Image 1: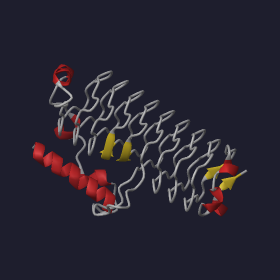
Image 2: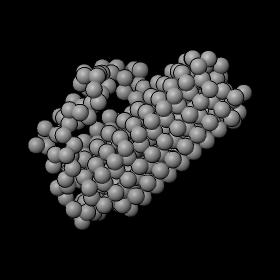
Image 3: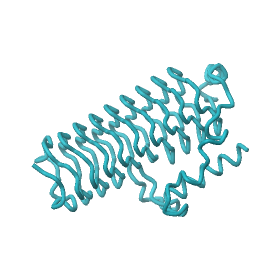
Length: 265
């Protein structure tokens, strides 16, 4: 069963990236109510035991473990391996995932409020509907699906959410933040190239020095966002709201595409 779940996670990631799972929502191929996706095979005490036994040479390994529904708030998963693990509907308030491996992990509707995820590796992760308000993802690699997540006040300083154009064998892997709440989030010096931010709310966000080249911002709301030194080259601004921008004169906003249909001051 575990081997099957790992293969399923990999297959789903490829399908989401390449569109081979049909034009429908890629999660439609997964039964999210099944025990594999909704039930835990361990208790919080079991998780704590594994974390306490971890060493620098042998980090805690939760590969493909089913942890959905558990309250794991405050636990320290720093440098732990959670590849393909299921943590759907988990409560992880204030948990630490510093430099943790979260590739292909499932965090659907998980509560990660205030979590420390600095320099975590999040490749093909599923975070739809999760809550990451105030979470710190500075320096993290975030090529994951964060559609409809709440990331109010989250930190992405120096984070890499952009597409890796050097490796296209699995399709365009990048951050997906469609309809996400990013109000007040800090993206200082972050890589957001080709990231999907359609219909997201970036009100009051700090985009200083961020690379948003070819980012998809259709319908996004950037009201009051700070854009000092932001690279908007070829970013799609179709129907985006660009009112009260701070330091817009110090960005290359004029190089964005479809500015004519954006809502501006």
